[in-house]
Image (cartoon, rainbow, N blue to C red; front, side, top):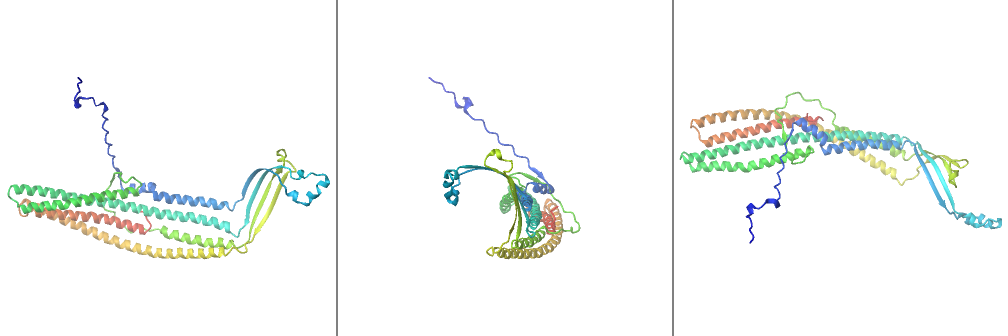
Length: 439
């Protein structure tokens, strides 16, 4: 007879231990300046723009190499059997002279050690202009990097404001929800004491149920705004971040702007196309090259680096293009069209920048007025809520009236926070229109 112990008393040797839940990560504390600094170093778009500048710097070295002498060392071993002598008139006379034909086609070995030098002499300014265009390209890439940096930094500032705005809205809605829950609890207590009606209870529950979807939507908005900000900062979208409040921006005079990098980039492109026209013209003119070589060539390796097996050659070559199938004509037409495109883009961009600056100034004035109005409206609703609470304690108004006053005060608080953040956004837009970073 076998006795089995109950499952509760059996040794839990075969039961795997419970895995411990990972500890939640502490949120990354950031203020606006810290977020901007992190974006400068971690944003992938800025890294790509910086790599483009490095690429243009390397292009300068590559282009300059075409104007410098090129030196090549060559070592060669060739073993061959040449039968061309058999097809010459000497092969017909060789047997009469006692020379066998096999001697004319014997296998030979040739050892060569040689240094070759090539140097462009005169290209009508093509090589120097190409180097200048490469330097312009580096400057153009630097302007593009400045534009990308401003776009990224202002995008981070906007995302930062988006998170604060979503959190502020969530706080307001959560306060409304807690107030509605308290109101439902108060009405139910009064209903039991027969000092409220069933209609009062239905109104209270209706108000509470109406806030729940708004609360869920506000929570989703906060998560989405946080993910957008994390993407701008080069962080994992799920990284928790604690942001510092901004308060009110300091009032001051309009900052002095700088030359917009977008316009400077287009002007640099115009200069590059004008310089490229010189290169196209130089391709139609004669060019002069110098080539030289010196080395040794022998049939036996022991004779290398000895006289008279040394060989040398110096030559100056002129190349005069006569007809290239109208390729240069097509290049010139293409370059002229591209130059005109960039020129018109610059003119259009200048007009857009002027409109952007005037619009930003007007929006800032409007944001200042809206912030002042929202602040005063909130002060008025806060005073009205204080008086409503006193009246409710005295029994002069109902709890529903008090709930309406609290909801109005919360809405005014939300409008005040939005107006405050809108003032920051307007200042950021003004600084962007002037070619300045957010801070």
